[in-house]
Image 1: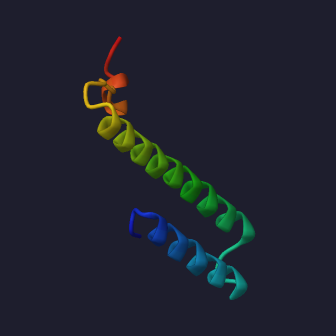
Image 2: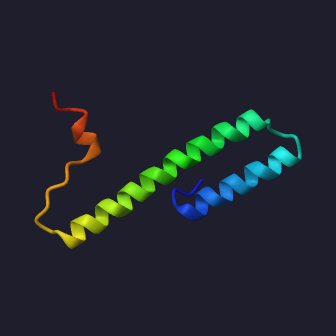
Image 3: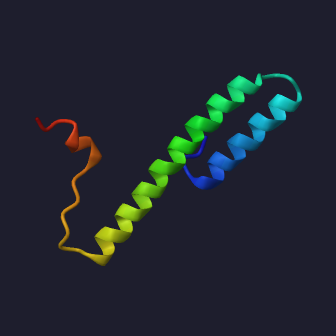
Length: 71
């Protein structure tokens, strides 16, 4: 799956087709949709972060990955 909005949309459409063909369950589709929603939220965060960095070049924005390593 591509990690962009188009890829997420394509993936979800394919999952809905599988549901119609009874290849997956509603519960499986719900789980997949939840994961896609989380991925979309991360993509939105990264876009907002990039906009902030561009608009305010002197602004220091900590990385999420670094936040977990600090006591």
